[in-house]
Image: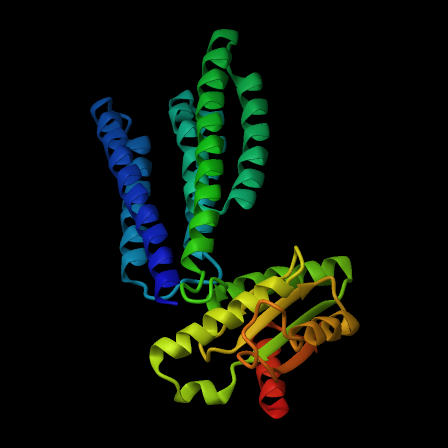
Length: 311
């Protein structure tokens, strides 16, 4: 869990740094507009710079990650509206449009950022073709296309890196299965998919034998390693296994019903030829199906309570 929070902290610091850099760039633009006696645009640029500094300070001061990034949406909406309507009124606003793609991809995850920038790009092209001369159109669209392409490529690389890093960070170093933090992330995605596709979703809980708690730390971890190997071998290609903070395990089974969960539990109760006899036997197991009124916490709570009753 600490590694997961550290990963989120690093991502948040990157957003803070970019917000401060963009604020610095906007302050330079404000100074240039002021020197050219364009006070209206200087005030707007300075206001955006101030809002970005306040947003960066807010990110630094907050301790928990929000579920709904309202400040990001407010800042992005202000920038989108100002560039579109401002450029329609005055060509001096045109240089602001190049900031939009990079800024949006820094603020939002890849998919929503792509939807926002695609809609913005369509509106921008229409305005450029309607309001500017042929030479200016070509210059603006070419520069914007270059900024947009750079933003998309950077976002793709960043998305894949974060996904791979997230899997590493959210993997339990002892058993090499995912941790409880990753379970909540994946479970929310699978519940959404199950609702959308009207498919079944099943979870199987595996209790760590209580007698293991009396072992030495090295022996206890060795037992967990053996149990983790056993669980990983039983997984299908699209299943996933997680170690809870209580040292119990949960297997997430998308597109699965109760019968498939029972088959998995029967497989786990069997001892393989390459396992030391008596090392892993009499496992306590419990399965739960996802219900439409469940959320991640309630489903995990019901699963762990059923596991406790089964012991």
